[in-house]
Length: 105
Image (tube, rainbow, N blue to C red):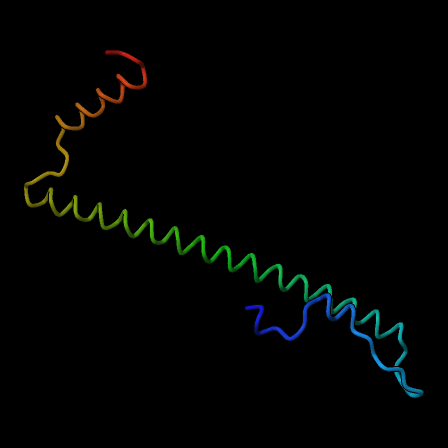
């Protein structure tokens, strides 16, 4: 994104204009450029935040798609009569977790 920008806020701030006898009032130019710098900085901050939000959403989407595929496979397997995890298996796993958590042997 930054390679498409011509100026950075620092370049705007540091730019020097040549003075001409019929030139603009320097104070007005400085005031206007200060506003441009503030806007430019805010735009860059907003763009970076949106890019990060976009990456976060893409990652969340990948995780949800993987979970969806897993759940879909489980539903298809259970509808065909072959359950991926049965009640006895779940009870055994729960019992093992209780032993680990509560220290019961």
